[in-house]
Length: 217
Ligand code: DX5
Ligand code: ZN
View 1: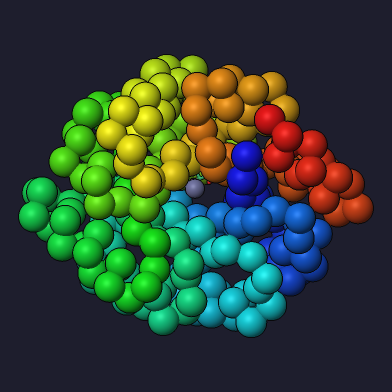
View 2 (view 1 turned 90 degrees about the horizontal axis):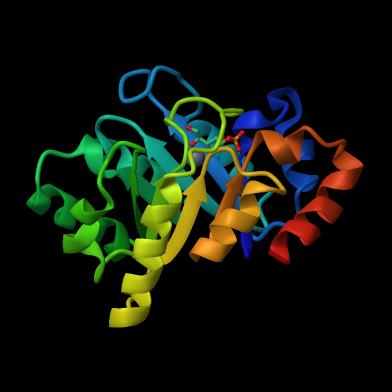
């Protein structure tokens, strides 16, 4: 299991120290919110660029913004490794395909995400071209919410479909992941787990050991 600590729950007064405290994780999950697509505002490309200078990990950028097409290039320049946008943010299939292809043309992995109330089957048109699918297991906007178990059905569908057609996408889950819920998503077929409040609630000196344990699921 790949663990992606979400810095949304970290102490931003020492972002460098916080990122270094989770150095055993392969990914760092960066939640970008615009106060429009979701009712919260977080960080943008300026901050991503700064933390890029200290990075040893994959920067997994989750765009919860209304206009990912407009801002994608800024996150690419700020050295994102994966850029995931929301299905719900775009108007039609051609826009979605164009954005996926434009992200990939820059040598960046392209991800697509769905909110809890969106049917997983809407992604069928993109399964053969995306690098990652992010299933939201909470309503996007805030850390520390409770895991929604019906996301497990979506994960199972994506996992079975991937095996059946030999698709290449990674399956990621985001929201309410802890040492209990990770077992459920792992059994369902998840390959990348985002965890924010759970990891960052531990003292810095215990986080890397915790991440090693989570990787075993
Ligand atoms: C929520 C964000 C998540 C959030 C997860 O909109 O996308 O990445 O940080 O936080 P936890 O792990 O606390 O649910
Ligand atoms: Zn996220």
